Length: 515
Image (cartoon, rainbow, N blue to C red; front, side, top):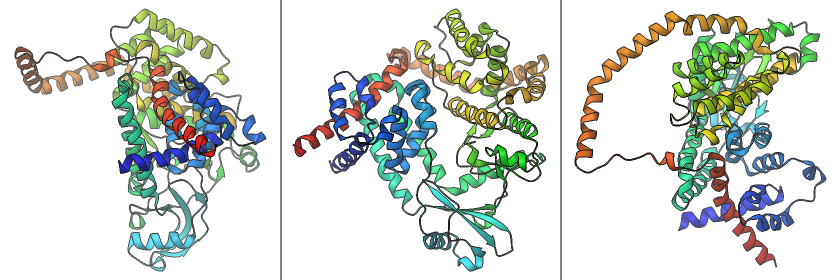
C-alpha cells in the first residue's frame, strides 16, 4: 500500500509535467480517453515555441524536464520505431542527455571517497569546472601525479537513489499492465523494464564503461585511423573513471576541418571502415556515435569517447545481416525473405511469398534513390515495421544497430552530402563476404555446427525423454502464449494506455480539487 501511494504521488507529478508540455497525446489513440486528453490540454503552457513543436518534440521536452531516468527511457524508446512510429522515434533520438553540472568540490569529495586517497596524491591538478555534464555523470579535466593529461568522469551524487525510485515506478506500472491486460503480455513489459534497469546499472558502474573502452581499443590497436583513449585503471572505480585526455575538432564542424587541412573524404572512408570492422569483424560496436562523441585529431584520425552504450552482434546475426543486406542491394527480395525465415525471425507458418512482397515494397523506394541518398539504417527501420503483420520477434541488438547506423549516416552526410559512406566501405564488405560467406566458409561453418550438435546430443536426448514422460503422465504439451498475442503496435498503444489512464485519473482528480 505504501509503495502504491508513493508511486501514485509520483504519477501526479509526471501528469503535471506531461500536461504542461501537451505530451499526453497517446491518450488520443486510446478508446474512451480522447475527452480526458482534450481536457488535459487546459494545463498546457501558453508558449508559442511549444505550440510549434511536433508531438514527439513535446514528449522529448517533457522527458527532459522529468529527469535522468526519463531521459534514459526516452532514449530507449527512440529505437522502437516499430512501436511508437518513425516520427516520434526520430524526435526522441534527438533527446539531449545534458543536465546542469554539480559543484566541483562535490566531485573532488567523491573521487577521494571512491579512490581512498587525497586528490593531491592522485592528480597534480583537477579542474573544478566540468567540461561535460550528463544525466548520470560529468567530466573534469585533470593532470595525474605522473604528469599525464586525463579526463575524469564522476557519477552524480544521489543518482543511484533517483534511478531506484523511478525504476520502482516503472516496474509497478509494468506489473500492473501484465496483471490486468493479458493481451499485453506478449510485449513483456516487466522484461522491458528489467532490460532498461540492467542497462542503467551498467552505466552507473564506470568499471563496465572502462572495460568497454579497453576492449574497443584492443580491437583497433593496429589501426592508425581510429583511436580509443587509454584507461587509467589505477584511478578508476565504480563511480570514477579516469582515461587519457583526447583532443581534436568535432566531426560535425566541417568548416573547421577543412580550414585545418583535413581530408574530409578520407575521414568518411575511415569512419565507414571503422564502423564495418566493429559490427562485422568484431561484433562489438560503439552505439552512441553522435557528433559530440567523435573528434578528428591532427593526424586525420577519428577519436571516439563515451563508452556507456555499446552493442554486441553474435556471429550468426552478423551472417544474417550480411546475407540480408547483400540480397537487398542486389534486388533479390525472395532471398531477403528466405534469410529471415532461416534465421527464425519470421514464424514458419507465415507466407514466404507474402513476406518477399513486403520486402520489395520496402526496398524499391529506398534503393531506387540516387546512391548518395540511400540509407541502410532507414531500410532496417522500415523492415522492422513489418513485424506487426508477420509476427516477427523483436531483435533488440538489431534495433540498437539500426539506430547506430542512422547516426553514422548522419555524420557522413555532415562531412560530404554527395557521398554515401557505405560505398566507401564496399571493398571491405566484399572481402568479408568472400571470406565468411563463400562456399569454403559455409562448409567450415556446417562442420562446426554439426560438431556442436553432436556434443549436445546426449543432453538433448535426456530432455526428449523427460518431455515424453511428462506427456505420458498427462502433462500435455504447452503452447507458447506469443502465438495468441495481438499485433505489436496495437498492443503498444494498450501498454501506454494503462499508465496513461492512471495519469488521466490523477489529472481529473486535480481538476476537481482546483474547481
